[in-house]
Length: 182
Ligand SMILES: [Zn+2]
Image 1 (cartoon, rainbow, N blue to C red):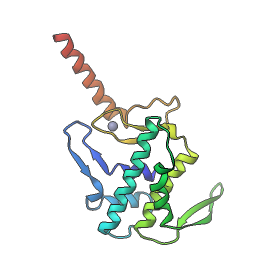
Image 2 (cartoon, protein in one colour):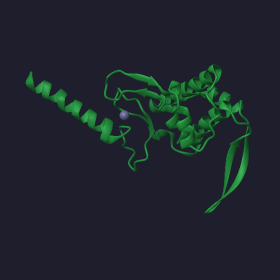
Image 3 (cartoon, protein in one colour):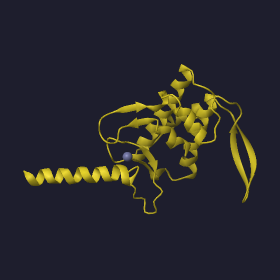
Image 4 (tube, rainbow, N blue to C red):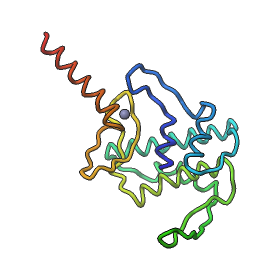
């Protein structure tokens, strides 16, 4: 999904070095993200547009945090999303697909405000049509990647079992060994 790929711009080294990278500032990263999601790249964002993108990311992360901590959300938690949605009007379109027809939303104008609205829409769609209780933050405290748990029994604890899952297994093993030695 666009929204969780967008959140991956917030990169923490999952191996625990403490290294942090804001990939929104990394040349080419946003362009690649939009290409992957079939969205037009409006050219490098201005300082104000970059600020708005980071603000949006902050707001989505804040909401994710509240949801994963099972805290009640109120109107103020949704304000930022609504603001992002309001600055880029959307139009409705019908498109033919192999299995019939689909109603899609498309931004009226191009530009970063519309890209922001696309990101917000993708998140809002999950909140309204998906299952918000399946949104997770990777349990590796060094990673913090946000993902959507699609396992049948709702049991995915790490962004990737062969990456953070294994790392945490090794850490638990080493911690036990240390205890055994003392
Ligand atoms: Zn992880």
